Image (cartoon, rainbow, N blue to C red; front, side, top):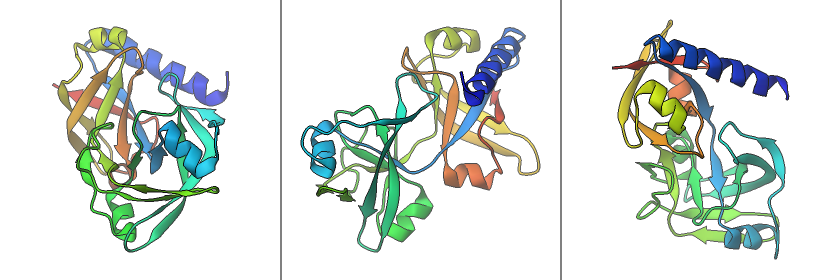
Length: 211
């Protein structure tokens, strides 16, 4: 087990112990721009029959950052080196920050992951081809991953909306954080880079659940 995995295990243990005392804190993570691809688009971008290869495991069970990267082109500009996350999904979607959208010339909507209907599109460029994405460029809504056991400790359920407080020099309260509960989740709140940077937030910082 590498150092980051050990550190996360310790953090989750601390959060669980505090929850049993009626003090609720969750670890935070800044989610940089990335793309989820369906298998069809993977093959267009990287070649027929292509499979994503794992670069490193992510905090959420079964999820990984792949070795593959693409470019994203909008009406105003292009961003290169966008990491592809795996495994393949039913629908392709790109998650960016508002700052990214200015460079691209794209007007994304704040959406929960997977809700791509009506979201703007862009051009995805890979080493073997490109995809004209009709819809699927999002600013990811704030969300808290949690599994069933953790949800019981925190008295939460899927679909709840909570507020989280980050202390310190740039004290910030993040409202409208949607709880995503299930076996494929593990305790962690995901914020985009604009949100995290504005609050001087570092990966692993603990945010207090405001009841």
